[in-house]
Image 1 (cartoon, rainbow, N blue to C red):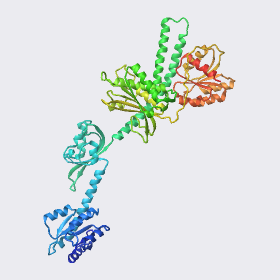
Image 2: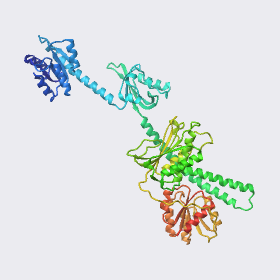
Image 3: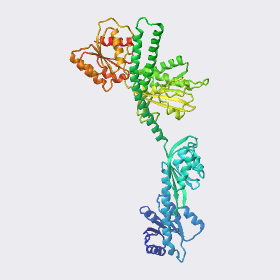
Image 4: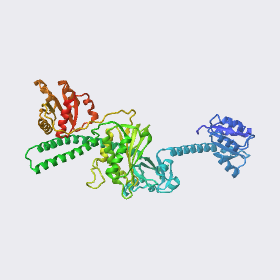
Length: 635
């Protein structure tokens, strides 16, 4: 039994309407009759039917005009036109007006015999049209690109998403082969394997680097599937393209951030151990220089050792900055003044013209910053910019300062910038720029494109570490032939506080004062020995311990030192806990924290009050003497 349809007959002749209704009811359908066009318009506006059988000659309106009215009022319902005259011109008008089909109503009414069949065909055609329309709308609304080809690979249809993805109009792609998207990144074997799979009725899936119309590339995930007809014959292929560019960008950012964190952790650990070694090397060389009757050659050798160890210490400080553990002395700093003074320094020392662009809204703004460290970053960026700009077409470097309020995360490399209020320092050059493969490695330590001996490859890595130590963010923008812009996003201070300058450390010879009883705690034997010898030269008495437990064991003997020099990075021990244990054992003890790794921000809680000072490894002999006397002189 066929499906029961709800039908609506609009016919002004009662006899014809009656016969039509009976014919359709015998076929199992439900039919409702209406004699006027105006009445039909009201009913159809409030009721749903599977099909309308509409007479062309109605007493109040022509059927074709009623079709137009239905369209104007947004009533989407399938119509089968019943006409008394079957001219080709009328048939064309009826179909253009939206009717599915038409039937000629002959005088003998023989059309009634064929009416149920024509009704079923019209309903089926309408449903197929609706399904096709829905599929086309779904295809056009899809966010993924869709491409349909014949079995030879000629493009038959693409959707809007694919047009946008590759920059071609569908008229440009019609009849073309998908090799129009070939970027040259994949070899013949790659595509041979693809065709082998799909021609064997299998689906192929993979990642493809495609070419856009503008010759840029787009990374995509592609699924290609065969289409077969009812007989199993292969007729077409459909390819679904998903744009992976943003996903790949975020993936590279995550990989870069993880790599920087891992290498930074390693660099920090290496720098700490290296500082211990340097403290011993520099210390023993300094002690050697104090020996009497040294030959000129030996004295020169010791001098070279001291100089080379100081150069090594500078490299270690760069590694610590890369590891985001720079020794920062942060205070409220005018970014405009910092930029102006650095521009003058660059112009004098690098013989490089610099243009300043300071947004008036940012001219009086401050950030919590270490001016010396940030100036180092700006100078390093200026050096990179100078080296990338070719003479004699050298253009000025640009130092720029502006404010930026981000309501949401801003995409950037190597990491997105989170929402917030920032002061943005920018260094822009007009040099050769960086291709993507170079830019992806630009922050790697020791990576450089310069000639051997022309650079360490630490400039950008150190800049990244210093900026991160300021709770800021560094962003790179570069393109081949268009130069490079490095942006430094620093949190903007909403309230400016006045802070004094850090006291200058004076290098002095030891004063002949009554010797102190000093406890030195360090796990490195060479450092212990050097510190002991330095302090004994100054007239102090030294007791050494390799860890806090060994030092605190002296409490039972009644030992009471005047001062403790404590390494904060003793393995398997907590530096902060060791400070508290020393103060619990000897409440009035003066403490000198000695380390080559800690940030001043991290040491801040330990330095509260007047009983603790900080000395960074490696240090010179008179720096140690000065630190001891400063700590002991605090009231």
